[in-house]
Image (cartoon, helix red, strand yellow):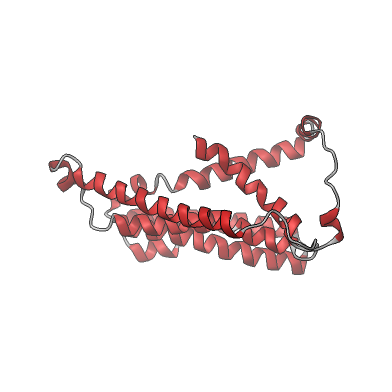
Length: 225
């Protein structure tokens, strides 16, 4: 719960760091690249989980009262804390609050005074904004919970833990590639609504294909979806 409450503060801090450290022409790129950190971290975690749980057999572990599972979970926690510690120590040692010379004139300006409650009230009074917020809330909820339910979805069809982790990692990797491609297309065409429709159509086709690929038990077919 504490990690979930802290996540928005970290994600929202990306735009603040970009505004302080980068010029006007670099901020969008810096924000986009920093925004990829969360899905890249998820992809890395799926790969690590697949490696740690490779060869795990629930039936064998139940006979040992879960000793193997406890050992593997402790190993995961140790790896997690080592990675966190390395980056946290580097953050405190190397990162400064702001650069010695401001990267742009706008970076030296004080942010405008904003009445947070009034701004939220104004946004919630707009039906289009509420609709978009609802849609993206559901999409983000599906994305963040999908990693937790990969095992129950795939295991009944004979996929092992390593294959399940690879599926999750590929899902995130090609999602990142799709974001980059979509950004390039939007920069060149400026056709936002058409691009959004194409993305939604492509996602629907992939999910329909997965309904066939998952029960097949064929890992290659699943990766293709």
